[in-house]
Amino acid sequence: MPDSFASFGRGLTRSYVLLAVALIALVVVTTSVLAFVLYVGTLDAGIANEAQRAAARAAVYERLNEPLQNYAANLADEIGSRRVGVRVYDLEHRLIAQSRPGLVAPGRFTRVIVALSGLRPAVVNVNGGTVVVIPELAGFARLLATYLAVVVPIGVLAVLVAWLVGRAITRRAIAPLQAVASALHGIAAGDFTPAPLPADDNTLRALTAAYNDVAHRLTAATAERERNELQMRQFVADAGHELRTPLTVVMGYLEMLQRGAVGESGTEHVYETMLMESRRMKSAIEKLICLARLERPAATPSESIDARALVRRAADALAPIAGAGRIVVATPAQPCLVAADESELSEAIKNVIDNAVRYAPESTVRAELTCDEGRAVLTVEDNGPGMEAPDVEHAFDRFYRGGSRTGDGSGLGLAIAKRAIERANGTIVIQSRPGSGTQVTISIPKRSD
Image (tube, rainbow, N blue to C red):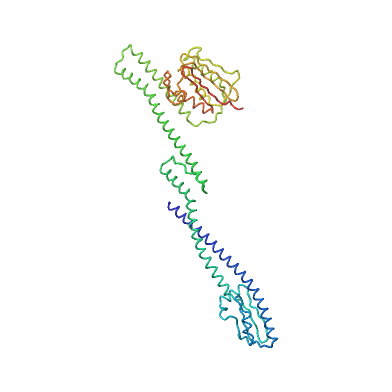
């Protein structure tokens, strides 16, 4: 247990023990006071009764013409008991008889107890003197001593039990704090994939649940960061490979030209090859720049764009490459307005149609736009060679070019299309089987008026 938790645990256990001591002391004092009050009440009534008895007995002796000095001792013995004492005084206030000598202790403590309790001796005037009936507290002292002899050991045992129970409760209460602190120290040491803590039934379940939620989010964020870093390293490696090949070709031809190793008959071919590879590098760089721009946080689309115009524009731009009549476009008669960035959505549609033109060179490409039920849906379909299942699964990965597909694309077109469609709050899906052609479906919410 860390020192901070150890001191906290000791303090908490000490609090339990002090609370137990206070409760036990309160019970002992309360019950003692209650017992004393009850005893005083009965003793006060006993004093009055014994005073009446003393007066009655004295009257009997007086009728027998007995002087006080003769019957004082008998009267004291008859009236005195364990609860009350009797003293007989003559007219000169001299003590002439008392009950049970030695049992009544007229000391300071007794006088204070008698005064605080409100007990007053009863004085009976008789011929020849007075009879005083006083409370006898020795019996109560013996009763209280017996009570304390029983209660004190029980109190000590109760304090010991309170210490043991308090220590057990403290350990159980501190256990979640220790576990959370240990886990947080692990995070501080660099472990960003902490294991969740068991959600036992304890009073600090909320703390454990909060930590588990943080641990889950931290683990997910760490996994996401690692995945992004891996994708970034792969992206950089793929981009380097994509640009290195045409650059190597161009540099090779430049070295050949520098050495004069190319005759006049091959110069034209060299220039055409260098121009083609330069255009390939330029296209790859433009797509990389476009993809990097799309990775920035997307602003809320505010433009109202007619999707029909974008589809037709993309088809017209690709018509010279595809060939006359190869791209067939079908759009609704009414405008189909969507909220998106025009350049991004146009690039996405163009890349999807271009992808179909490249990889299904002998097929007609059909681009059909429908606009109903709150969404604009563009379906681009071809009857080309189709795609294998692994190719469909990775079709939107950057620089991915499936083994079953032909062409010299960069492998970035569909990745750009997917990112652009997602920024417009839309979806893009590919369906394809070998020999059955490929269908790409783009769905974007219509602009709400």
